[in-house]
Image 1 (cartoon, one colour):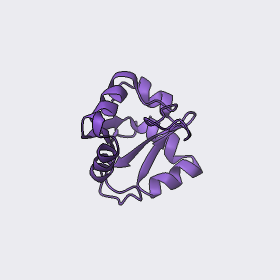
Image 2 (spheres, rainbow, N blue to C red; image 1 turned 180 degrees about the vertical axis):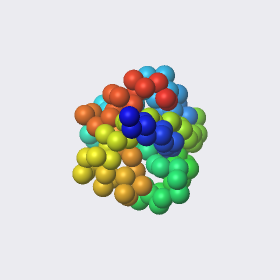
Image 3 (cartoon, rainbow, N blue to C red; image 1 turned 120 degrees about the horizontal axis):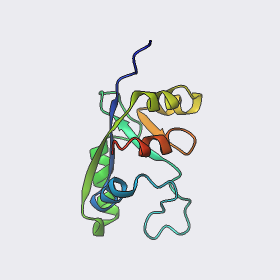
Length: 124
């Protein structure tokens, strides 16, 4: 039998209030930023690898500081660190589009590409 792939640690830069909501209810693909009634919902939960690979989205720290600056009533910057089972990462890495995101340093969980599995794993 082939051993299960090891879990991967990922980070999500956000605000404190959003981090609390994600930890309590899971990533919401229908999330719309405050005051963002004219922009589309998030549609995905984006994270960065912690293995040192560069990310086109910057670092989770820089991203969290930017979110906190844009939304000062949300409790400041926060980093949500998550452990993702290897079999869920395989869902992403075996899809050409999701694998391209991963090569850019972003693990992007979308409906149909690990989002429900990720939340159900209880690793947030």
